[in-house]
Length: 434
Ligand SMILES: NC(=O)c1ccc[n+]([C@@H]2O[C@H](COP(=O)([O-])OP(=O)(O)OC[C@H]3O[C@@H](n4cnc5c(N)ncnc54)[C@H](O)[C@@H]3O)[C@@H](O)[C@H]2O)c1
Image (cartoon, rainbow, N blue to C red; front, side, top):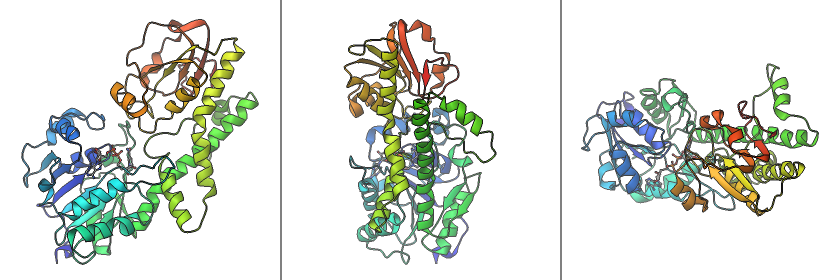
């Protein structure tokens, strides 16, 4: 049987389904050793990648160009396409599509189910489908495998097999790139687990950790981000408490951080596609099992309250300086969900902007990293990627992009101006900090 052979065959061919922040770096990495077909439903994304450009900035254009091939073949390299037929002769299918939540914070599995249909329609005897998207424990085998079976007409763990290997990259982080992060792997049988593990081991220089089951691997990913969310919620709560006491939270954290086991979390806005979303996946599954998660959801509520809280601190600071709020001009520095990256998905700086607008203020948003069109499409907010020669009544540093380190505050402040730093950037000499 095909699977008895653990050695990765030289003619293995990998399809990566979904070429976003996670899929592209992975496809690029595998393409240094294997023939890889990158499949995405977004034709514009495919065209951009085939022209050697990655607008997410996760893979440098030059690095991408070194693996791109013009023809889909068995040769090593990456061929990107939006045509399903091109993935027909692959034997590994790796699914890296989004797993968002709806407006009531319920998991949306639609992209995963659609990708499973696509792959199901292509499955052959002996193929292995590996899911990388972040999900709750059980999603792979309970939600996705039945779709694969239905659309392939094949039997799970008899004709085809499944693995789960969560991604741990961090958008904009050029140090912890995919090959440098230990990869958790798993498979639907012990042999498949080993085979999946061998596949990743062949490209991940940091090594792998083979989990005993798919559910364990799924659970391990979702708790990593839930743990971060809860820890950040704790320091955000501290920031609220210490502000009432007129104590600088960052000074407190620095002092407490001298103890060997004090965890170095910072207060801030928790946005993006992962930390602010994944805990809801775990919470939903826990609720299905009749358990109401208290700490996980309290952490979510606390972190989601920070946008309005920051806006209220800004307004209070302006009032303390006798600055008229109505029609005041406020500059927001940064709107990406985190520093040095263009990703605006689930940006919480947007919550600050919306809350400040409710006070009938004029908001100018400056972010040199972010795509203007995307901000309009996603949030209806127009932004500037170049700073205007204007002065403001308040300036809020919302995102710690490197560009803001040399920010000449004096050039943009009115004689009476309140400045607030959400990110505790030492170079940014603000009146108040979170
Ligand atoms: N962004 C991160 O840093 C990060 C880190 C770890 C894990 N994750 C997880 O990885 C998964 C993917 O996240 P992402 O940030 O790469 O998303 P993304 O939105 O950047 O990319 C997803 C890509 O999938 C494509 N797509 C959607 N449906 C498809 C389908 N049916 N068939 C083919 N392509 C399809 C989209 O067009 C898009 O290009 C999510 O589950 C996320 O939680 C993300």
